[in-house]
Image 1 (cartoon, rainbow, N blue to C red):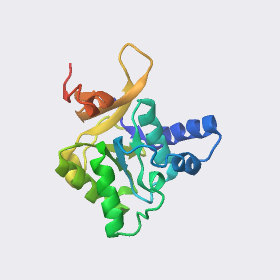
Image 2: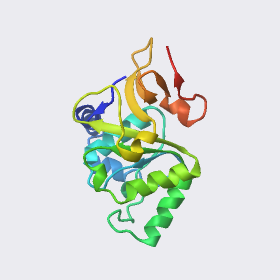
Image 3: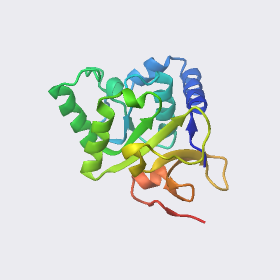
Length: 192
């Protein structure tokens, strides 16, 4: 089960853009808070390209999951400004989400909020995972520093079908289907 590459995430965003005939920003902004609970809080750097955010969001939505993306779902906040009001809104959204996915890329180290969001969600005892978006394909993720504490996402075909989905892994043979892990019907375990 290979990890995500920038090329495949951007390709997913392009498919979504072509299908919808809108820009990545227009599609992301359309997701303004219609609901108050989310399956996934998508933690990302404000420097992350919109096509990367849209690609991962599209993959998650294809798996039937609702996704919160801060500056698009709640456009009134500015992730570049650390304020009490922004922290309160993010706490509310984190409390209203079943899980957090941390987009790990060349941009994630530039974020002030991402480590705070991850620590907050982990402190709540919620499901937390890392979505490595790499320049080259790899089969396993060795997280740097604290990121190595968390399982990571990969994407591959469900055995016996042609349908692709996200998997949450601790190692190449220790995994669960992501959507089932989120809703509590499957745990990460060693597989043959």
